[in-house]
Length: 206
Length: 178
Image (tube, rainbow over all chains, first blue to last red; front, side):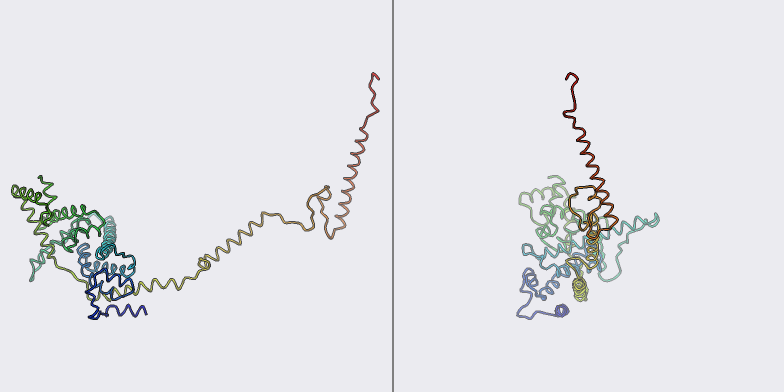
């Protein structure tokens, strides 16, 4: 029975009289907590691309980002009762995604350190791939996009997160403060410093 | 306003969240420092460029993959419940080990106590009784040995009594002066 429900989830839709768009995120999670799996599908559809953007900008890899977004949604399914309505749903789901992305980032750094320590002297002399404009229609835009992407990747983790959440995801300072669990003043200061550092990075790249 | 104070206020200025007095102070600094104005313009342009960054999307089969993951996760959770059989909270292996240990403990413990001989009476009066307890079906040789022992003991007690009476010198001793 449960399996049947699950397999039909992706194909299910809400009829017009009970359109999911009339529900807020908090109402949807409340319905899901009561066992309405259509509410889960709606939440996934609302957040999959937003989270994908956030995680992709944070990690810089499409496949990995999609895996992490899926894991985030899986966590949402497994731990639905952990959500309490004292916080916004968006803050809660972003926190899960950020924690999973951080875990992946730490794992990747550890792997990188191990590999470097096993490299010979010649092997260590490597170059980062050069960012060159590609021939085609939106060359300029593509080039600018790649520059920004590279500059964001160069930022330290705590600056990168705030820049993505504020300037790409356009979250409020309060939301960012809740997601990162740091004081509002710290968030403001980090965003300002991150913007200045990004400006310096882009100046170098251009 | 110095350079550090100016840099700290750039984001607030661009997001229009400075108080009127601070804003005037900031703009005064900008007018006096052309380099500072350039910096503010660059940061503003970067913010606009970042906002226009191409948005990525999840793949078309995202939902199907997610459902597969949920399905796999459900089967992983339900499997061990079926396989796990316990006896008083122990798995069969641990239950047998614990039983073995308990039996071994009882056996070792029993070795510390001396076995009680059937027919033996508590408290002995003579050496003979102590050495050879009375059995329900006595061996004739042992019976004889015990009788000898009892006789020998009696003799020694009699001799002791005799010697004690011999040693009674009252009325036999006379003082020299008497």
